[in-house]
Image (cartoon, rainbow, N blue to C red; front, top):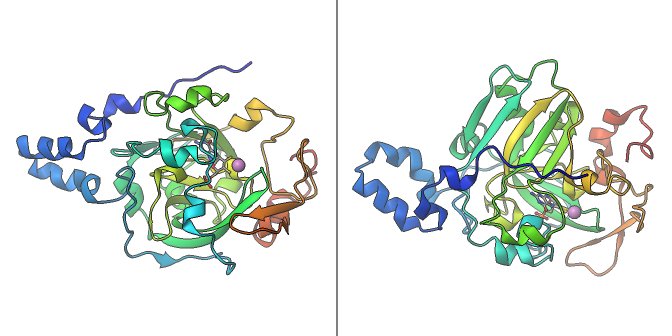
Length: 320
Ligand SMILES: Nc1nc2c(c(=O)[nH]1)N[C@H]1C(S)=C(S)[C@@H](COP(=O)(O)O)O[C@H]1N2
Ligand SMILES: [Mo]
């Protein structure tokens, strides 16, 4: 049975009403009327910088990161208009339309559980914790379409190390933001929210696992998981959880949304594997968005050299 869980803190609880309504002027007025000059620095990024809702802004000082594929990148318009983000509707074009006014600042990501230094990171702290890298990764949805995206971020492990996970931390549980007021279409999606996902600790700490804050040179568009999401390129797309607010280090394998909905079709590991079909369709091939002919799907989505050793001795038909 599915139990709906509520997030500890609703976004509407921590956000000034005007901002919640998506009015920038409210914040400007607030700063001016309260004479909050000191607040300017703190809220500066809300006004002109990362994660301020629907308009992606240019990210400066991005360096070239490791592991980039030299395959042709998918046209940005395809990547931003063919999405899975069920909180904003189940149609592929729904998120682009319905996430336009999604309020993504202020934003906090809480790191908690089996760590020595639990803390909440502000979006500003996340943006500044490490140099931002562009990494061109293949991304493959379990529905047999794929994209090649110049993501921007840095290894999740960089931030994780700052909270000092203990030896009890065997898995990492991720949770997306959910607010039915901002995401009314979620009520019809047929899955439980908040969206949750999980990784084994060694998968989470693998350098390929990207804490992602941007793409195509800019901050993330709302429909692609603003202001911060995960990208795990050797796993099916649903592991790459969007708009995260909570990261919990835990002892036991955590729940994962699609696995909760249908464990028979979606395993916890969900490594891209052309040899293990989905019960309802083949996973042997995929269609790259913008292309006509399907191409063979690669084991671990082509990242086997980097990640195959994580699964030594595991039966990947059993742990699909
Ligand atoms: N919170 C949340 N994260 C999510 C999803 C979702 O519905 N909600 N869909 C997943 C699926 S199935 C895929 S394929 C990718 C799609 O990412 P993209 O739209 O940026 O291509 O996001 C994943 N992350
Ligand atoms: Mo997906």
